[in-house]
Picture 1 (cartoon, rainbow, N blue to C red):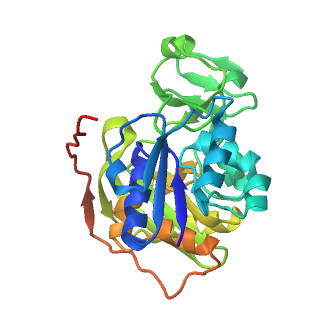
Picture 2 (picture 1 turned 90 degrees about the vertical axis):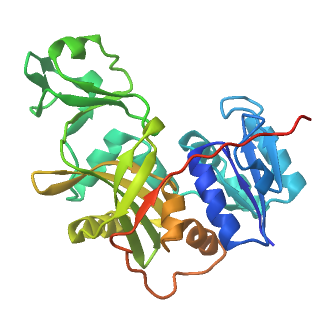
Length: 323
């Protein structure tokens, strides 16, 4: 029996993973960490615990103590900061025999930086929008900005935090005046692509690569509130190429935009995403595949996208009895 610990269990990503694992592994025990006392699905878990924030000096001692006390077999951090902390403590998990469900260190270092992501993709011939560190802008005028080299972007352009936090820290800059008012340190500027947006789940066991592509509608907090599975061969080729050059063994999520007939990756989430629940219900069970990969299994059979299938995020009301 597996004993699986998820972090951020009050968040949409962890909830989607949890629902997938409960469906696939009903005999396993699933535990949850969160900074809040009450979380939407706490009654479905073996136990939920209020844990320190990842910035707290007691976070790692608290985590290690809990892992050892509960004899946790699989650890699934679900937010980028916690994933990076787990990566820094990878030796501990190996020594304790705890299976750590995160991507390899080099992939994490690339994909948690939007600038490194764009640079890496460009170096491997994969389309990405023109990008640069905002602090390195050499000139700007009424029409746009010039980067430290000769590359130039016209307004409007995107200004976003280099370190990923979902949809946070993103601004559309329309003019020189707006540019002058914005914070630059720790931000990248990126050319604005005005076409349709797609989100792509990609999984690889190191050999076979599988992907599923959604055209989506965003809602509160940048969450996908509705999706439609589409078949775009060029996006599938981009997904396969990206998995290969990143030496992927696990799951990532690509964010793409179409522009003038081409598809550009503007972000890679180096983890499972909030569409994990939709994907699971459509047969793309990458949360399950990743657990099985950690347990020594490889992908069996084949997978074909359920083109035309749609998913809609629903809301619910949860109440808790008086203690």
